[in-house]
Amino acid sequence: MNKTVLLTAGGTGGHLFPAQALASELNRRGWTVELATDERADKYGTAFPARAVHIIASETIRGKNPVSLARTGISLFRGTLQARSLIRSLRPDVVAGFGGYPTFPPMFAARLTGTPSILHEANGVMGRANKMLARGATAIATSVPIAGLSQELNAKLVETGNPVRDAVLEAAGKPYEAPADGGAFNLLVFGGSQGARFFSDALPPALALLPEDIRSRLRLVQQCRPEDIDRVRKACEGLGVAAECASFFQDMPERISQSHLVICRSGASSVSELSVLGRPSILVPLPGAIDQDQAANARVLEEAGGAWPIREADITPERLSSEITRFMNNPAMLATAADAARRVARPDAVKRLADLFETVAAKKGERP
Image (cartoon, rainbow, N blue to C red; front, side, top):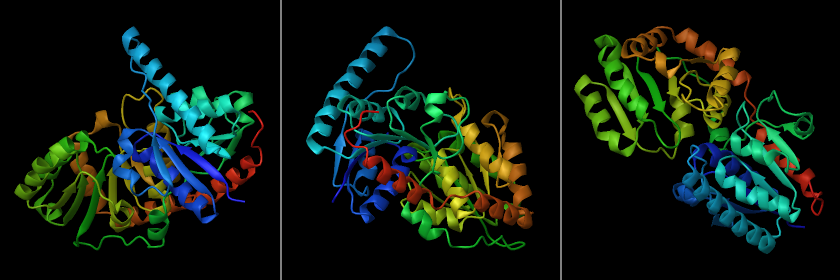
């Protein structure tokens, strides 16, 4: 008998990519997949393997301003009504949330309608939205162990790993090829699906400090915000660095697999993909996050020996130039880190998560 799942995720790659990986696996198992998200998902929606994409009202809690809080509350209430109507129409066997405030209305509506639900936490620290939803979920799937939760929530935890897209699994079989002495060095820089102004500001002055013989070996691929592409490209041209800059790369898994070193944020999806693909990295956790989830994610690869986290506050042009030079001159160290990253990979995460869905689907009609 065909089963239906309503997946819900925030409109960024970090939330949507694991949901996309699961959707592909559930499709292969004969499930019908529906997606509920927000307007930011438009750039990904055409590639998402769902029968339909439903835009649900939501809003992030920003600060403590009464007007802002009231606006957020109204938006979430409206989204919950929309989601409840959608659930009553679709009658899904399971509703699943992958993080971000757009998950709140559908997951809360699942609780109101008695629909089994799964909450997926990709990070090493549970986010604020997920904390609010966790008590009403039937099960909580995690990527890594999460400490500090109540006994009630611990009883719901199932460690499945963080699903990666089919494109990542297809590229995962390529062995790491360390850079040859004096040969071309493929450097990939990205800041998550939305790009990162910080890297566009930090990299050009660091490249300018590299010795000319080092700089001439670089083959740079960098993700930039649209407004930063021209200035980064021109800076690289002026330094004689071969560079390809874009706001988004559809073939990012292939780009990662071709790199000798990656410099990026440490979102859960990035860390999972780096481990499955087995590529060494310099990780720069996003600063200022209340939960410091990216710092927790980075520690997983650091402790395995597969990455070198550096706080954003500690990155100066001199520091970044020194790190790039150090790694370019130590191919054996990079190869060792690539092997270490691959050892902590969970390439079977999507199958484990899909198995959990098969189990929870049997609980339809039971109230969590």
